[in-house]
Image 1 (cartoon, one colour):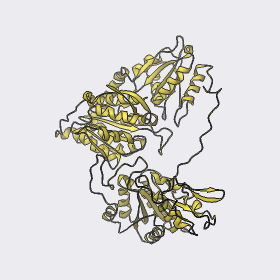
Image 2 (cartoon, rainbow, N blue to C red):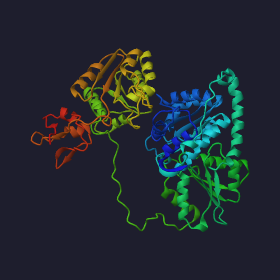
Image 3 (cartoon, rainbow, N blue to C red):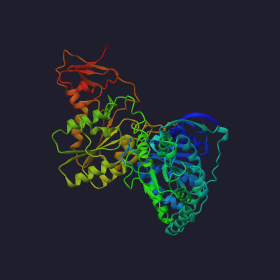
Image 4 (cartoon, helix red, strand yellow):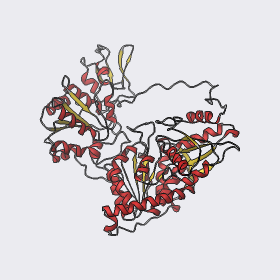
Length: 607
């Protein structure tokens, strides 16, 4: 064993490697991305790892490996679970021969997601066991426990860290490579009665699943991740917490007087809920306060336990209105709730007598200076000025095209949905010019079927592929169009243009959005074509190419019309005493501002 200061996601990856994982597949999504990237970096020979084109593909690749007896892990964020749910729901009934851990990183807040959905609730829905780590060290241990449980029962198992666990750092004990398990897959054994999901098999296995989960309630009562900490003598109040909320509760309880501290129940396996341990905890308690993020999973389980066992304890939490039903918990929020619950006189804010730091400035998200997506949106905006349009956006950096002054994202639902929405609007409003914007990575992940649907059903729409040669929003991961795999292999690039033409899109044009006049002309020409047509705006993300020659403003030519600022919204452009200036630390020399300046006052900086 050795100590290492490590991120939560990296700890999960190291726990998987220590468990002898044979294959890891996933799709990038904050806050989960670093798990798979760490496996790729630290893996030993024989461990296969891939960025799949989407979560459904990752789940099916991992299922195949597990059928062959491998230990596998699938990684995603909570919205990715929606994509993976089709194979996963059936896989629960089929089971696995090796072991499968489904790593789903939830995002309370949400900080970088379109939903606050709770994977613990999905675990109950899918009847799959779920581990909910409260710290970096526990995440490292729980992934190993999840592999063991999965192999024991032949079932997929969820590991559900949240953002604050995924991105926290801690110094923890890690196994040395000599201590890693070595797992040798048996190989696939033909048995259609086991691997082909007919209704009779599903019916028989459903009964087995229910019996297994009933047994896990008792087994989890003895699991180290679930435990009771006694409170002060005579105190008839209790607290239940899971995940990062347990860490907040620990910090808060340490600030309360010892004589008012309640009994504490930590839940590390929210499903199946460890009912026997909860019964032991509830004995002699009048009131219990529950801390958890997102759904009232623990609160509902406690209410069921009370009814099922004829107990008489009052449960306070989200359902009772005692705790917020959305967003993250905080240490201060937990402390204030515990202060009220226990009747303690601890000050509301520990630093109330100290001078508070100034509030951080409000800084809305914005497209980077020099981002080619800004040029793409601006070209479409100029080309379609004065026409009735709808601009359907998607999930990625380019969602920020909704911000002023661009205002080029009228809808955004989920990955790939913009294509379907544009088609739906077009069928109802034939006089509307319908555009769907999608990134290059998202095109491969979830947009191709939308294009097929549009061609087959004779829609009239313009698809705009914003090809910046990477998966920018989640950390610049490779995808099928980049010509490189996660394991560093150089492979043939899959051409988006050829895919579109193969589907049946006859008008496909590629243009550099930073060539503004040409880009505007291309949009006008292509949008006028009937049926489904496509424009590929191809220009690399500024994070993966060196900046060009920086630009500056010639005050002698500038008439202070501010068109560059008002129409582009580039963060490198700002006003100083009424004069337009370009921040040299941010400028990438993309030339877009220079191209639209009516007096040619912006040019290369030669200082």
